[in-house]
Length: 326
Ligand code: DP6
View 1 (cartoon, protein in one colour):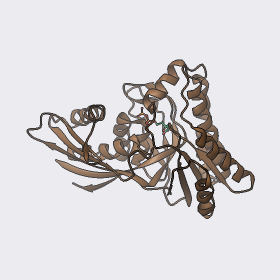
View 2 (cartoon, protein in one colour):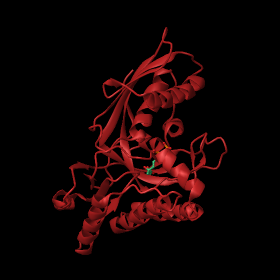
View 3 (cartoon, protein in one colour):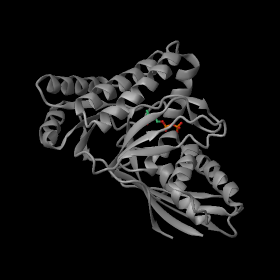
View 4 (cartoon, protein in one colour):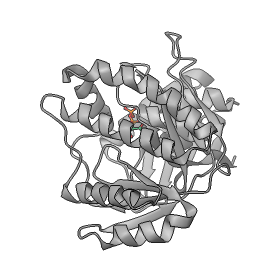
């Protein structure tokens, strides 16, 4: 009863920021993302006799209680689905440096969904895996698939249709995602807490959810039309609205630092000079520039030049979750 799986992280072009059902972890609106080739988690899960509790080794060290509890709740869902009672030995490794601000629950829970379900002898479709991963973390539902992925909000109250689907695969567009690390400190407020606080206190929250639905339709069409500047325009719009609604919570949440703003300014200046490039930012201060492959070197050197940018990672669209061993 053992399996090992890999899943890649993803970045959202139309952001998920708010839940309609925190218990089933159902998003309040859909989202669209790109899976990232070079940023991933490999997890192995083994259900064993004689274990009193689940164990989690994360990046070579025993994980803290909060992480163990979140993993155990997730394993409980798998145990219930499989009708088993055994505890699990879980080993999870990120290929990206810890503390680089790239830590992501998306690759973690997508890899755990695949490895955990196979170890429990479940044979789930990609759609069922996506539903399972969503219960661990909303963004993880998208990491089951490669390329450009849409998370569907779904209509059923049990959440069985709140799953992701692939729009186009990782070979559809030769894009580069250039990540500028502007701070290596861990973030003050995580996504789950940040979005719940926003939903509870921002006067703009309902407008944010309403307008996300329009962005989704526009983004899907822009991707199918291969209209890069349209994709960029909608992605920046969605990103800035997500940060604006978080800032409008009470007390407001500010994920950016001064370097984040400098990166935004530089990217917009490059665009004004005719280079197709746009930015997106998640619940932290790192800036992700997205450009076509031919602009990679220029954008990388421009971002490197900004004082305060600590590191740069370059990646491209990547594949979906895959089983490595069982
Ligand atoms: C800003 O998927 O981490 O990255 O479902 O509570 O685990 P939970 O939230 P999570 O939120 C991701 C938020 C985001 C935007 C996005 O990826 O769409």
